[in-house]
Image (cartoon, rainbow, N blue to C red; front, side):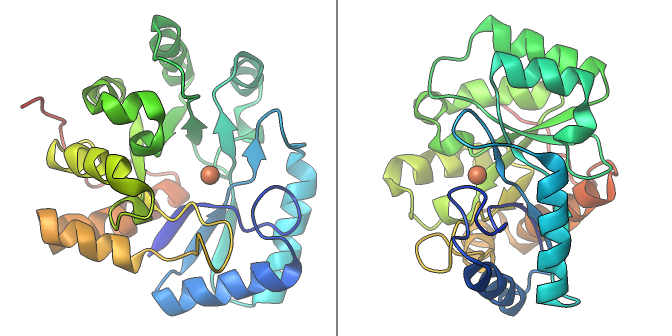
Length: 244
Ligand SMILES: [Fe+2]
């Protein structure tokens, strides 16, 4: 499996607190069947985002982890005005290494016309936004139907694996299942931060998804689609979202 959202870089944000934790997260991921991880440090107002330093740390972590999992660099991109302006100028500073894919996290405030206009500008520049965990966003959780518009604009929708197992509460689980049943989920990812509370595990979420929509779609969400993202290719599984 391929995990495209993971706070595994040691000591850079609210993710892995130490090198020991980071290497243990690598081991846990491998034993869960994860072969590739995209390290996604936050790019927000709370943490310093320094791409070159993160890239150097990623190389160190790869050395410490050994051959597996294979590590790539992306970022957990907060959808703020300043961030978006910078990403339009230098997308490679934020995107998943060497690809057009960019994780974007919306704030809990309402979805304004500004967001859709900005998505349009990003798309026009060849960037493919990946909307992260809409099921945990307070506004989108209560209006999951508004996520369909992002999918229709060509965004990828990423739901957190453990939302399907109820770890983020019943509201997130309900919204995640709603999106899944409406063909508006393209990828599930761990959004792991540690080895205990938010571990790098995808299998439980995959199995929960399989019970709802079958194992072929579940596999696409943890293998085929995220592997294509890391390779910079078009998604092989693109369900058309439906309002029903
Ligand atoms: Fe995250």
